Amino acid sequence: MGDSRTLKALDPRQFADAHFGEPTVRDILAELDKPGRDPRPAFETAHFRDGIETLADLAPAMLLEGVVTNVTNFGAFVDIGVHQDGLVHISMLAERFVKDPHSVVKAGDVVKVKVLEVDPKRKRISLSMRLNEAVPASKPAAPAPGRRAAAKAKAAPKPSGSMADALSRALRK
Image (cartoon, rainbow, N blue to C red; front, side, top):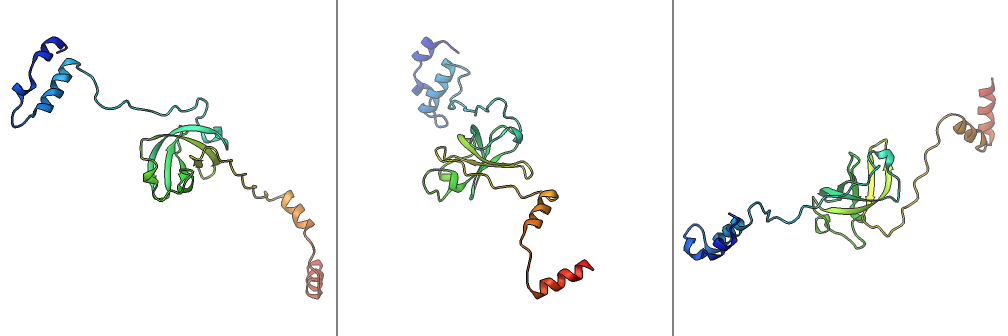
């Protein structure tokens, strides 16, 4: 092991037989020359952004790096380092029309995503891989019951007509 001169002097054809062909013997000799070398391609991991650890740390339009954890017919789930995977809907996987999400991404892919929306109540994160697109404005929150709702009710136009007048008189008694 590790003695390149001796290993290069060996003829792989001498060691080939019915079970192990010449290519296999060459691979074995190469491994003996450099033991411990991993023949697999380099393993890539996403670099999660420092300071982004919970849903509360996320904001729309943030650009992040993540790892695809699952691909479904409607999109892909991406781990962005906040203990809750975000969804990239099929319509947000690419700038072009995507019929099958599996044609764009696969589990384990490292991808760049943009945060579109965060819903902490439902623990949902909406992501996009269309990085050049503007983030749509967030939906207005429903008014809280209480003073604001009462003020809106007072400001509403009063119903008119004979039936409304009769109901109004009955409620005052």
